[in-house]
Length: 65
Image 1 (tube, one colour):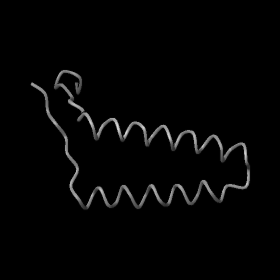
Image 2 (cartoon, rainbow, N blue to C red):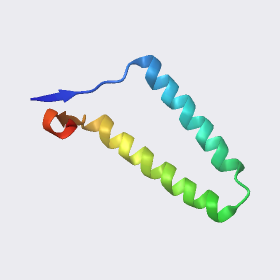
Image 3 (cartoon, one colour):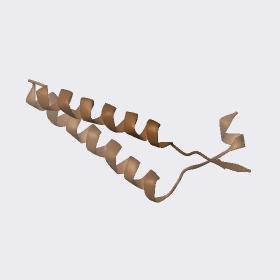
């Protein structure tokens, strides 16, 4: 049997605040090469979160053991 995991409004707002803080950190990175790599990672995370929003993840019990 699978389980669906949800996030409440407070957790979502906390995640959004962490995302803004991470973006500010990336924007302030003085090393251009490092900043570009961090942007790529940040963008990839955003794509994953968008996929999760459109299609909730189901985790089967047997995968947790």
